[in-house]
Image (tube, rainbow, N blue to C red; front, side, top):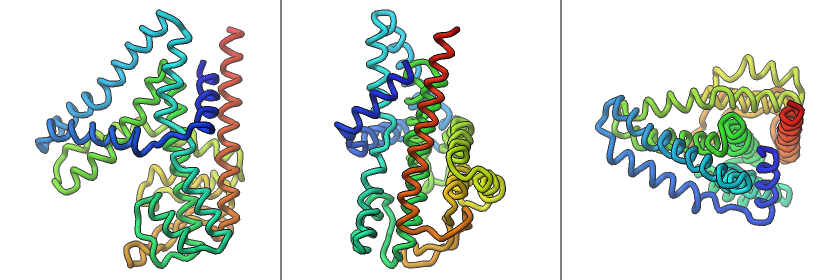
Length: 307
């Protein structure tokens, strides 16, 4: 059922791309804001209660609804799987921006590429060179492929029905949204959301990094994975970026202009500096990793049938 659900979502996404910002992100952020406004009194235990209501409760309710649907008809449960997976994962969350940036760079329209990058990543882009735009785009695509495809897919497989997909998406949104809201308040409300997401994302991060290594340059990917993430601002996400950069044989990270100032970042990967040609290589890496996932799901399905 997992493989059929995944294939169905990929096909639906090609014909009917999801407006993720309007249909998913905005409502979930509003939900996070609502829970935060009701629970945030600055203490750690308030954050625990808020997370249980905002994340755990919807997942439990979805599990009950899934089993009720399955009791009526397995086909109904499969449709629920497809619907939730369509809302919580997908390439279209980043591929449209990425493709447009790549096209603009190939046409030599650097200003257009900067504008598209700024809209996608919500960051200042004035003064960025073509190589810097390509580098930031590859970093964003590798991170997004993990957050919107591979991590969601892994939890979808691990938990019954669509519960895992919803768990990952809600946990990520709560951590990001409450971090923004709690940053100004300087309290412990967001601590549990960060800890919970770090635990939830521990295995997916390493699974994504392993997939990139298997379908790319394995030795360089493993070397970069082992030696470079500790120097990245977000050490956990640095695992994916370092492995992806090593698998591609490209240099990511490094200094970049951020709000008019040069921001020094650790270097990730090995090989040549990123450019528009490596953007196409990154697309190939993500698709090969996706095919690997599909193959593994197929083999798991065969094993279940044989059992």
